[in-house]
Length: 118
Picture 1 (cartoon, rainbow, N blue to C red):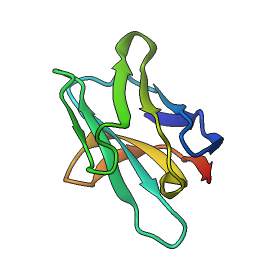
Picture 2: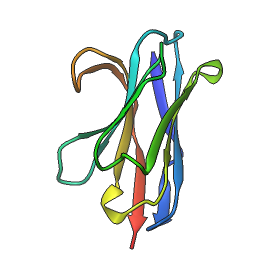
Picture 3: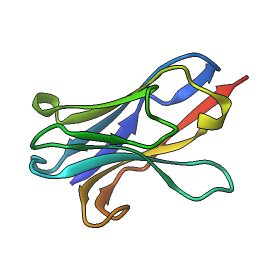
Picture 4: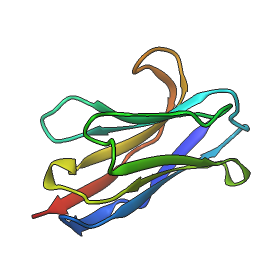
């Protein structure tokens, strides 16, 4: 399985970005997929998860109310819509698939940079 993120970039505070995570190699189903992020000098942190069977979602407190995770099964693509971005959202964002533990996933993408300026 290969995961490829896209959609990162630079935006001013208050702006929006939509990240995409395209999967290939085999059809992903009955698994949990997630977005994580890592800011410079900080540990990787959980952002959001989506369960593919029932589309249930979970968000971190910092993402709740501003970010929306979704999945288009026909396109094998997961999204993260990020609104009202803040400078503290600046990080490399990673998608992950096939949860094995709370923050342990079998497959990871290479990451996409999001930079939010004040």
